[in-house]
Length: 181
Image 1 (cartoon, rainbow, N blue to C red):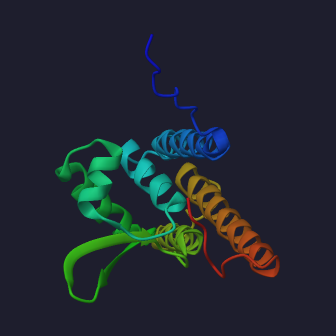
Image 2: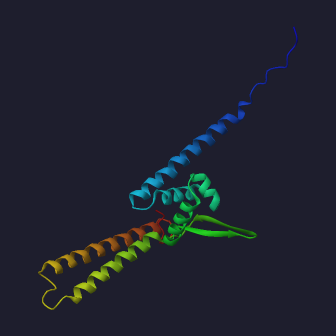
Image 3: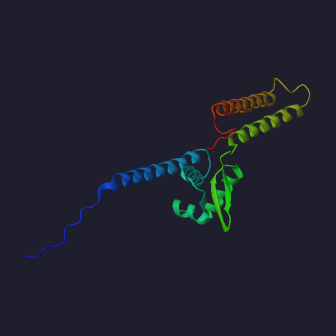
């Protein structure tokens, strides 16, 4: 009978950390997918929502190719959706000295809610302009005038409500005039 090497005993000291890492990774994946579904409900592409989710949980800006790899989608889809989110002011493109690649991160001051409130004000003004263009004597008491009055009130209430909400967020110490989706 020969003496064999001792059977190595696995070092279990790292297992709690590994389990915590796995739990965090699983939570991140659920969050990323949840953001995709949430923004899809808001009529944006699911990939755009997943991009937002990934960039929210990423402490560092991420390279274009890393976004495609992590979300398992084409570079074309990443290009289309990063452009959309940049135009909305939700994410921003950043660079690093000596590196020609583009990186993306969440815009910490996106002002998204303020832009929505501004769009409501623009639509309110458009309805008011149409109402003023109605022939004299038809500005009230007719179907078109009544519809325009309702639309003007609707957009005014939405814009006022968003501005009130933004003031509360600002007072509570949130990002000034922000609102990440």
